Length: 232
Image (cartoon, rainbow, N blue to C red; front, side, top):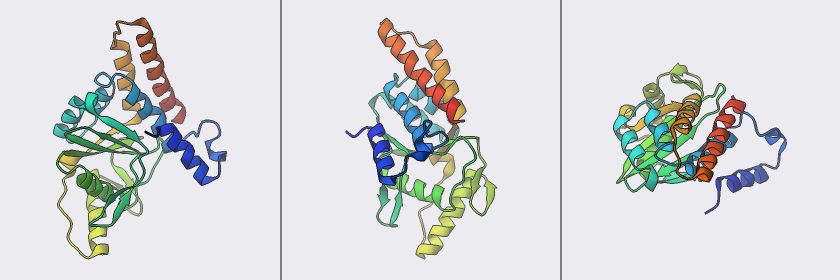
């Protein structure tokens, strides 16, 4: 399997401009996402990734189930395009956390001020529902600050309103009705600072029987919290 780091390097090669990645790519979503979620992939899942999912807000039932499934989950970073063929929608998740019974699409925004396009939440949720069919789907927004979301041309709006704006736009553009989707049961959010705080708490409480394993956990946790700190 191609690693997230390799995918990031491939993206850099494709862009052909390394200048913005100098100094660690500060402020770039893909760099921060790779540093944080790669660490969460490698850290003991129940104690760390599970804690992050449990700390998020919204879609309580699906989040709890996804957290319970983390040891069996596959974390795929920067996986490329996902398509909803019936609606001709194409999106690029920052990460996908998939287990036998849950499917989590991660949309990670930068820590500093970020903007959603009008259709973004709706497109991502429609694709999440399509790819998560037969499982419990969840769109997880990783944000610099809690909602409201800043949507292009509409200012700051609640998550449910951001979804409705996008659904209306897609429906008008395609001249067709869309399936009803509910943000309360399908969308959750967590901030980067909350992720760092959960990881710090988990690292402080973690007890390893092997000293080498314990030191590895501490190093990975420190790399994650440092990434959030420097990108902020």
